[in-house]
Length: 549
Image: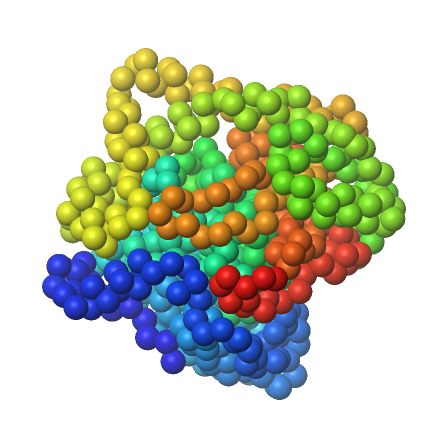
């Protein structure tokens, strides 16, 4: 079985040979991390592509227990993530997972299930607080040695729904807001996460482990977070479904932040149904996150009724062609096939339906202005409430990284940390520029962006390719990302759903449906309809590095 990480920050300076061994592993090229060639997925077959509804039915019939299910997933994590291909998506495990599952089995026998997630094993990103024996570190050694005082609201809600939180997932360290030259999926604690379809290719990020683990069938579902693309890209590039919610639909309380103006938390599943099932457990007004007050009257505790295999019939869908499409010909081929499939399924396609603000979004510096300001303010506030004995501010993190550069800065630096730290949060001119940038972002994303084109063509949703095909992992020079379509919904705070669309040379391609504020029900209907028509997802084969696919 997998052993959870027990290293403390105090021990970091005494790691000696262990630290050297870890560093040497992290410094290997991605093909050396991929494990032996010719890996054959051992199963167990009853976990491959199984849905939450199927697992629930098996537990209801007595064929399966939550405890046995946890054991099966732990075994698979050991086979796939730590041995075999070494996907490296799981950062650590919850040592109490089996005990929690056993208690939920007893509750099911005596009182029945709490709901559709009772006994379901999930993994969550390592920037989501848990007040248990696990760590919450954003992938950094800096926060080892302290425990958050409370569960994140969403972690608590999943526990209340009967979910077994099995462990924490690897991620791009600090949600990929540390360096301008980073490799997605790399963290100091976890090393480089891999793409299960091609082991020398990027899993994207920052929710790298969330996409890779769900795709590799290491859990029933997962949680990730997004500021701009960190749910959509890793779900697209790992061939799974995921929902990036309207800002405020899900709480960010207890989530290590980048920006309260853009951060969201959402579910990953191998199907739209699984992601929608998890979403229902996450929603609700939370006094710990003021943004959720706006969701009152707009959320549903069960999104499954919106699933519809015929959801494309009669839908009016606008096709984005400028800026957020056309960045890779291999992707365009799959995108055009997807559009044709929508037509054949009864959708009315408006092509093109481009955002009036598309070119301005692509060149505006305002998003970075907002994120640099918010990161310093929001992270300092989070750290103040965290109660870590030594890490209280962003400056403390910068100093820690400099003092432990061998472990934290072996491949790329902390340029974004330094830019954010240089922001004067009390300077009136800086505050005015920040507010102007935020207002402009909203204008570009909403009334001159998504809402403008939806209203112009009377559309239910827009569609765009999610991501390029996975690029080669490059720890020295960082990501070679060619494009994506996440920024409009990120600036607007609007929802989006990523759905697998097809393969190019054996590599995943996804599409994103996006809509206006609180339009999750409509998007779930459309996305589930597309999924039912195309059935594009296929499980990964863990192709070794440097193999022609």
